[in-house]
Image 1 (tube, rainbow over the protein chains, first blue to last red):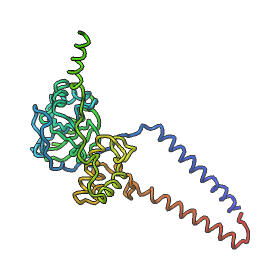
Image 2: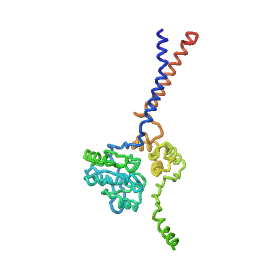
Image 3: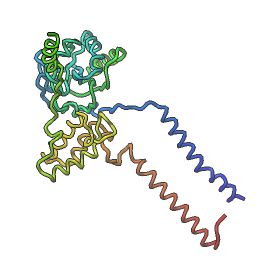
Image 4: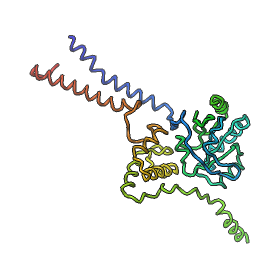
Length: 180
Length: 141
């Protein structure tokens, strides 16, 4: 009696497991896919680097510019990047609120950079040219645009993936003041 | 006259709109001179994920960023770094995601542990059943 009744319960275990796994798979199919590859560099320092100026209007960038004690935004962008046009007004708004943005232009030409800035505004204090994605790879950034909050000692504090929307502005200002 | 004018305008306009992209990094599409080093670099590139396209290795992808990553791989291999060092450098920045070669880590250990555990369970069940057959001299009920 005991052995056959326990067998009868055990016989359902594989089915229950199967239904459980099928239900999990069905549920996960309804969840939006997270396409973002998050940087693992939060809390770590920027590498030593020096980038030439991406355009005549603004000087280039070195690591020293991130070590002057003032938290800044490091905006990874490009003139060929469409979402970068969408975030331009928000970068301008951040600048007007006292945030300093340093741009890193990915695989870009000086004339294209100048053209983009003439059309969409120039919120940057400096713009460095990253012709081979070297700084981008060091940052753990996988696309444009991305915005990093860097504290006054050159430590990466926060990563914002994708264009900065109106609703992200206050959060970024908060991150900047937290990095103080 | 209009045709000549249109032709002249076309001549002026085409160089203006011909967007020549920034040339790819030197080692994006150029192999290393040393075949042994190139083989090492290619083997590594086949196991690194393109971050822009996500379902291709950087060896398979024509995305500019994949080209820049191939450049990094070849330059670092030529400078004497080992493939494991280069993989570790990328994993430190992008996490396990960037590597197609599964490693045992805090997040991936169940992938290795669960099949081992299931095989152990199967083995135990088989042993019990076969043992019972032998002692009963028939199929256990």
